[in-house]
Length: 230
Image (cartoon, rainbow, N blue to C red; front, side, top):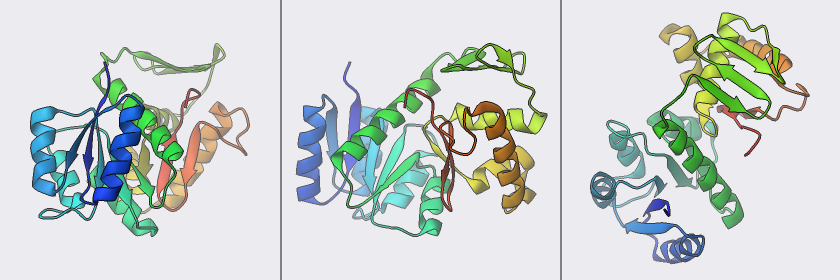
């Protein structure tokens, strides 16, 4: 069954281009020209993914994201012109799964859409206790992590960090979100501690820790866990 994409954008040229390309790729696309229309379609149509421009009429994209996250975990990709790290962090903290900065290539956007849809599908799976990412296996019921069948000795914090990142595979998690979840609300600005544990975890799960392929750094923003199939 084709994935349903909601495109919330008020620029006719962008809408025509994206609707055409996404339709060619097999997606079913609905368009919302303003914020209230986007919220209404999310509630009634239940899309599998949302592409949203921040500068929407009547209700801006940031407020739309915030309201959606009050009741839904549907993947959201923000189409933005912002390039500053603070703005990107703010978008992710509002609940966006990813962002793509204009101008962007359609190839990159389609790749981001595929990743976000896989993330959304994982959220709706039954969620067995054992998950596999290539040769990396995480058994959450036994708190056991193996690589190529060999048990990895992770500290409790390293394990919790790995479960958090892998549980949101493909999604950018901000420094603040990770610190708040793992270390508590009073540790949101302790970036040095986070970097130390990410480095330690990479040494244990990455084939080449100096050139990581599983835990990727989003400069100034946070980290993204990228499974081998992405």
